[in-house]
Each structure stands twice: as structure tokens, then as C-alpha cells.
Length: 439
Image (cartoon, rainbow, N blue to C red; front, top):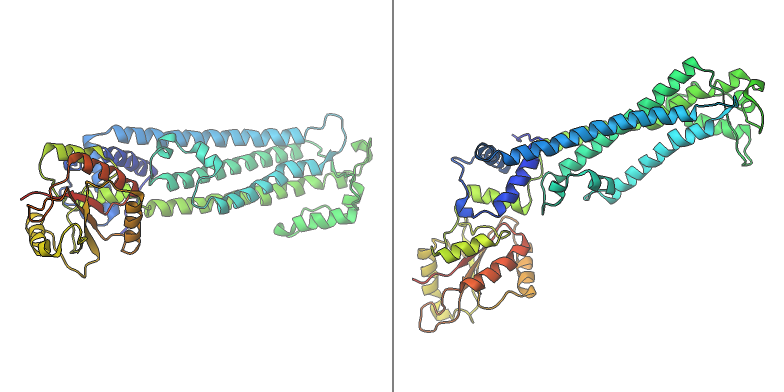
């Protein structure tokens, strides 16, 4: 059963995971009994961390509350903007006919254009944030390497923007209805283009198709409401000029308000689906999950090596493989005569189960040679050939030592530092490096 989350909880999880990256895995407080899916384990860890350190919880709550206030402010501003825009377009101080084209172009045409831009941005930014979303997403989340809550923040902001669009259209409709009831709204139409009344009537009928053509100016009303320069409203036909404002209101309703309502419903459903089953597959969350559910190898126990491991934040702990590993070792590193001794030492020292048919890999590398870009490319290729959750364990050895069996020394701390830093660039939670130990 999926574990339902809230935006506040996912934000808090991001913040706490970012803190756990810089912490020593050995200092990670283990869960008593991690059970269930990754979602359940991470939520169990989140609840445990909240009891011991409430600061991240307070910050997440503040960030979430800021979005709520921002959404409320945008809605209030949009409602006032809708009322003001309608009032300005319905203002007629010189007692002349108001041009229906102006009302339609500003309050309907611009909204249709914004919906088209929204559709285009949805296609172009399916996996990225649009410019407006980048502006509204809190910087605490945008600055994280791979925040899990970012898609949910994107959906929440999309939903808030649709609510603002609803508030704008409600303001327009309320102001237009109020003016239509209390004032004599005299609309006409005018254009310098070579357009006939019949052509305007065809356009009006096409626009009225969504509501069945009712409350639409007839051909005669359109002909009698054409605006000529200098003609006052008193000389026009009252029935013709009064027929426009119900039609314009319905245009706002069907081309402005209803699309926003449908988009807000879709946004709410999408947001709810994301909260029920959030994507928790970032390298950081996978690494944390492995830390909570799997035992990690101990290093040689020397404080210098433990400190070295702690310095490199991106590289996960070297987890004890759950499944057998396939040994990969170059004959130049380990001659065939030493391989059986080496294999026996591995099994006894690290308790590693080796199987030539296994999917996971134990690869012996010489840490005294610095990792080049070619090394990272080989590891990326190796990962592409394996399953995403298969372990790749690098066993780092030091300089050759023919007097020893196996014929190499443990790696130097400085060499281990360099390799850890470079391997961290791969962001592979199932990749680990383990230094060779002397018997």
C-alpha cells in the first residue's frame, strides 16, 4: 500500500537528506526495524529524525506556509485585477457605443493566448520548470542537487496559478454582470478591415457553439450595432446594442473560466497522485535507503581512513552486497598464480560471496593511478550493461609489492581521497569503493 505524503513532508525529506549527505554514514542513527517499501522506510526515518532534530521540520513548514500565502495573495490580486480590467473596459464617459472587440480582445483573446502558451510550455518543459515556476519555487528547494519535492512543488504552483486564473475570471464576470444589471451597456463593433456584418455574424455564431448559440446577437442586431465614427449611442438601436454583453459574458465563461476550472481539477488530481506515489528514485534517496536497510563495510578501522570517507559527501557508503559478486581483476594487477590466494583472502576478510555468474561486480583497481575520464566512462558503460540496482564494488589496492601475497600494498589515504571524489561525480548509489587491507 502506498504511503501518502504531504508537500511539507517531501520538502522536509529533501532538507534532511541534504544534511545526511555531509554526515558520516557510521554516525547515521539506524532504524530499529526498517520495514516495507522505500517510501515506508524513508517516512519512518523522517519521523525518527523529526523527534531528535525539529529544525528541518520547522523550515519545511515555513516554506510550505509561504506558498500558501503566496497563492492567497495571487488569488486576491487576480480577482481585483479582473474587476478592474472589466470596469475599465466598461467605462463609457462620452456616452458612445463601447467596442465589443476591445472587451473580447482583452478579456477573452489574451486568456486564450495564455492558455495556448501554457500548452506550448507544457510540451517544452515536460521535465523542467517553466520560467514562472522557476520564479515561484523556493530557492531552498531549487538549490538542492536533485530534490524529490521539486515535481510536487511544480504541480502545486501550477494548481495555484489556475486558481488565480479562476479568481480573475470571476472578477470579470461579477463586474460585467453588475454593470449589465445596473447600467445600460451599449456595445457595438467597428473595424477598418473590409469586413461585412454577415462575416461578423459567422464569427459570433462559431464562438457561441460551446453553449448552443443562445444569447448571441442576431444578424440584424449585428448590422444595427455597427459603430461609425462620431455616432452617439442615443442614435443606435437599443435592442441591438444591449444584445452584446450577455454574449461577451458567456465568452468569458467558456473561454476563460471553464478552461481554468478544468485545468485546476487536472492539477489537483495530478498533485494528489504525486503525493500518493512520489518519485523517490534520486541518487541521494537511494543511498539513504541503502544506509538504512543494509549493513556497510567497515574500513580498516584507522581514524584517517574513516575521516577520509567522511570528507566526500557524494560517494555512498560501501554497502555489504546482498547478492554474490563477479570478480574482475586484470592479470597485470594480480597474476594468475596469486588469484586463488586472493579469492580466499577476500572471502575471509570481507565475507564476500563470489560467483562468476553474478550480476554484481567486484572490480580490483589500483588507487595509486589517478582515475581518468576514461575510468569514469568505463564505469558508466559497466553500469549501463547491468541492472540499476546491481552492486559495483571497487576494491582499491596500493602499489605493487612482489614480496607479499597477494602482491600489492594497501592504498594511501591521499589516493583513496582522489578516487572517492572522482567517483562521487557518477552519483551512483550502488557504487562503492573499499580499500584493501593487509592481513
